[in-house]
Length: 157
Image (cartoon, rainbow, N blue to C red; front, side):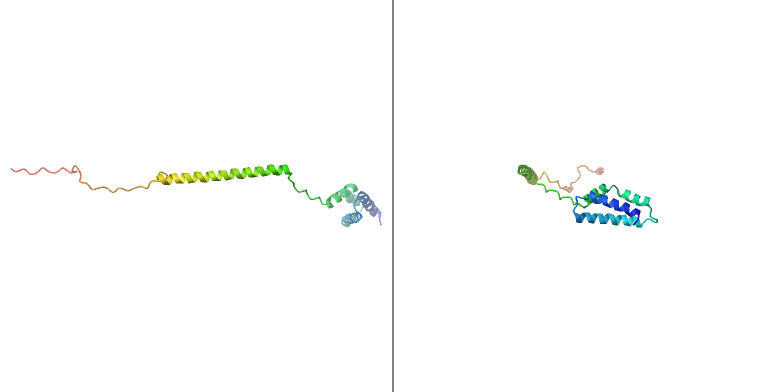
């Protein structure tokens, strides 16, 4: 073990103390994950120096912050409580639904009646239907005045 291992072990002990309220099994799992992460970062260093190891630990953050984040990430949020309508509000909601249904029904009935009345009135008088054009045949009558002057009758002389 070298000096750099002592730095990492001190950091992990500080995180473990910050996780004191977490059940032992879960605490061990979190510490093992953190230890593996640190080991993977250290393996990327060539050559490993104290400054680089301290840099890795500083990038992870304060041990208490790391512990708090680990607890938040792994604690499932409780499901939201179902919405419950109080009895007084149920009656109010039911009244609004009934009023809306009554208004829509009335509107439908009035619309149908207006349509029937309009249709009935336009059918009986024939005024509502468009007039069909009627073609008139021209009548053949002799013209009242001739178009050409007629010659005078021949004189007898």
